[in-house]
Image (cartoon, rainbow, N blue to C red; front, side, top):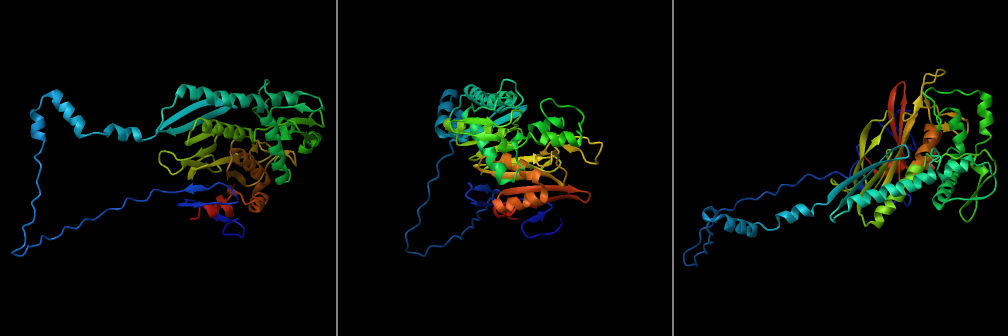
Length: 410
């Protein structure tokens, strides 16, 4: 896999330069570094001798130094005088936007929101609104919580049409579209297989290796074609034991909903992060954009991008894995819905940038399941901004999609 190939480029390291490019109808990403300050050089001119007969040059009047006078002034008068002499000092400090950082817990992980604003912010109310919004959607999209709508849909054996909240209906429709675009590599109905291998809500410390017959039998429960999308926010399971796991796109969906909330608050510059997935708008303190570090195949963050009006998500086999006694590699929590087994290839992480966190989240998972060959091929077909991290016995390697290179050329 070393060297340059047609269709993509291989890099050991990447440090983006400054540019702004539009690709595939997506919103622009701005990568930039601060320019060095330029020194202004002032050259002193020689004094000219005026010829006789010409008017003498005017002599500049030098104002007396006020400091001796101020030293003799009384304290109250001195305070008032200094206030007049140095107006606006406090105004310059207030002009710098305030950076507010809010945190909380959701979806079995943590969330963080950073906001920059010159206007006063009711921090307590914003914290409450954010937590309420996240909690509201977690109670719909989580397949872990017994009180969630999705959990109850999975538990139901009914095959009649069911009305679900619009956010769930929209996310399922989006998942079906990603499923079609990725030739079945992305499939939220994979929940029974995830449970079979011990990675589901009832997780085990050790990897459970099911028999081949168990895997083949469980594969019969999997398939997005077994979930019918109907009008008026209705869905229908054509198989009673069909179960849905939206963990590959729920975080992205909730991030997008939080961004909509911040927009309604009138925020122009913010960053939203849930469990490592990020979406940003406007500029951070050291803008342009917000500095975001990308994960590589080991979980380390070594490459930074300036994210502006864009989202980035990472899918990695290292995030959740269990030792496999039948293999030299640990078993990943990412199950290939086409084989019913954990993915096994040299691709260990994928970073995807997209206009919405929902797209970035789902596509990162799909590309990782597809593997290096099919994943890179599909990335070029869809013109996606993606970064692939591979690791084998010879070391690690970074592969960038063409769209990524157009955005961030060396």
